[in-house]
Length: 221
Image (cartoon, rainbow, N blue to C red):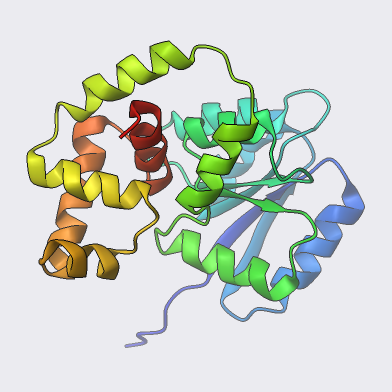
């Protein structure tokens, strides 16, 4: 019986055919990544996902018709959705922040080196977000986004659902600590840290560590 790990299934969404071709060429060179489909508009994403069942969706933001943010929000609201990596040409973009709050696993700049792109897809497929909390804080600090006081109140309310230990882990996640670093700081095993993170996600009804970091930052913790 073969024990080989199946390839990461990727769907590419971009309105520029040249960009789609370039991404496909780069990713096809990685033996453990399979391009299962493409879409040129956000409206095409739901049927493509239903047809091809990708593990990861590379999602452009600006597209005619249905944009990538609307598509991301709709996709992440479905049962067992694929991970979404948002593609952008901007370092600090209000739309990127919206995508992260919608549950995207992170964002990449379109000029990312090919090797880093491949590594990022592997990480996201393995359940690791590719946006560091430091970048998250930079985005929040540079983007004017209304409703900050309401977000603060909501975030603080959410954090009251956590035990004291879970809150410590959440704050560490918000500071960009890895599981191993959190384990060392809080004197627990990595497995225990992972269990805490899983419970935090469940209690706060969040999708990934990026959203934990956003919640911690919003709460001013």
